[in-house]
Image 1: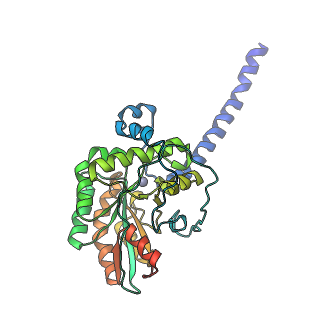
Image 2 (image 1 turned 90 degrees about the horizontal axis):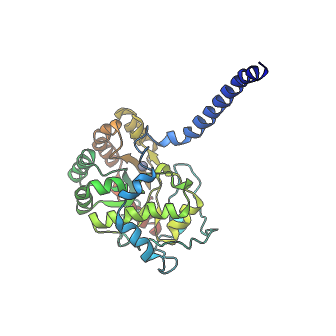
Image 3 (image 1 turned 30 degrees about the horizontal axis):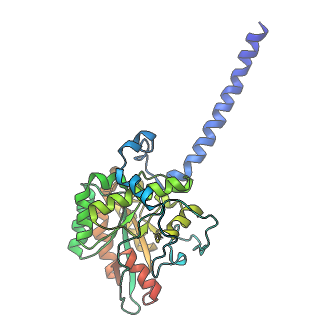
Length: 319
Ligand SMILES: [Zn+2]
């Protein structure tokens, strides 16, 4: 009898613990939800995926492990790195606290951008994340081509693998490609070896499809950790954030996004859009010609991120 009563009394406590647990879990999820739509990427990070990763990635890892130490790309020091979002303090953190004695990534093969901005010109970079796909990415490429504007695509390994021909097209039409990880995880929460794998596998696929090893990395959700910064710096990669989030991923209306871009774009800005990732992305090809027109009428010149960084380094433009 006594035992049974005790058991019964235990229930409210279990319920309470359950509710507390749920609250903690949902609070933890809030930050992610800021940048992530619900949620394309869940289910991709299971260990079952390992088998489908590019074989070249693992091979490259073991080959590269004995490679030379820190590689730094001309002109792109740690202080050039664009990290975080609008308003975030620029980190000058140059000295990594940890020595990442792990596999080196391949050296970027893209030549440092040479860009001569007219004195006082206003530069802005358009960026498209999470692709390529075979639906919105071709539409976006058509619009860019028609407007004679180049942009930067931060591509995800799982997509690169599916659409190598689109990757080729991106680069052939004068646009730029950056690495946006393989599975789109929060890299700031991963151990070093996993961060390196995420970047390396995508590098391998980008190289296979587009023929280059990119120098730019954008962290999924803009989530950057000291480890990621150090790995990027040691491998001659520049971490790229953004200054204007169009919120195309969140389903903002086209007029709202247009106003957002108009109000928040300043010289040297980097505009975040997506070319893959759920139903809301259908608005992005509608928005794109409008903001190209708006910003051109305000005197902006569109450049790739590399060109923007080159101009910033030279101080020749309002960038
Ligand atoms: Zn992303």
